[in-house]
Image (cartoon, rainbow over all chains, first blue to last red; front, side):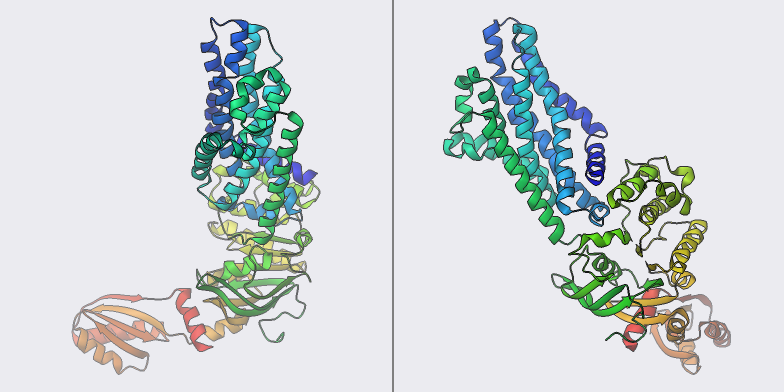
Length: 248
Length: 311
């Protein structure tokens, strides 16, 4: 446990240090600013509907994937490229534990940024319409999608130094494009994991989110299970890479 | 094949017929040796394969062929060996966001050793006064010492240091060498790689010289020195009346070979000092103006090339 916490702590400091946090903070404010500006004269019902429109889409299709991509790809990939990975590898610590600590830290870091983004945007609903019930589901949903995204991007970051570029292509071509065009592919879309959890926890959102969800069945339990399975597979794959691949 | 100067009687690390290639490039070729308690210097020019060999010893690289056993196990299969084995890598990479103390504590936490050893390890490398400053602001020498402290905190039985003296000033170098020698005297296996012969000579009881991925020479420092005593030096001479001087040089027994290249003469000799006395005399006799006398390849590379060709 000491080793897990040590790796996670150092990783969190690496990921959230410097100007990066400021840039992420500004990005995280975007959904709430949009929400705030577009609901000034809206009715209570319209405020809730507005939240399920632009702000939620900005969170799940822009803020969440971009933050997850940069933090996920950095968490293990930067160590490999910077040459510091040997400090972790040459320790009597199971490889899966290193991978899990890296993933866990990147997930926490992402949630620290995306969680408040979701909370602030849904908080505008609370301020304008007095409905604070969306905040918990929004934060939980963002956190679940973050786990799935981080898992994938952690591996991508280990494999290539062009992870951010490839990740952006993945996010904007696959997640935002192909999976919308072909509804049957929605089940293999990462942002829909969180969105389906949200729709499951906030049933009245389903009519609005139905199109984005495609063939995905709303439900928080299923979404959580999916995210956890992806994370476990990613940890196992990363552990295997750390065990088998040469560290130049 | 476990006898001879390349092998240690009480081996803690055994390298058997190890080769490593990256695509078409052979980094280490069919190398066998062993390391035991004491300080062994791994000597070789840059690009000789030292780092590749050390990384295989630590399990960071898998040998393409052959086997490596450290303290009786394959380090790639059994990470528990890292309780007893530590590496100080050559790369300048460290966690710049951490202070030296945090960095050493991090190593202690990952290895499961008590944190009260942290101060002792920092003290050992004479870094106490800077221990609470972020490593990002450290000089290269200080970073090296921080890495050494992170290795020492685990009190390893086997300590592998890849060019640990790079970037250190003479005082730090002397201090680190004393630390390495003390660890070796305690019965630990200490391997220090370097491309600087004098460095290795100052600290190692035993030397393995690696060139082009092969073991070029092995033994104690005096025997390596003897092996290198008759190495021919190449000297460049800038002088007027080139042809007359070159012809006169050929008649001298101190000169091995002579080549003329425009206004320059390239001479091979085994006695640099004597040649230094002969050349001005010949130039004066020939009425030629001597403007340059410079050894072309006093570098280790020439020494190692010689050792390789001699094998």
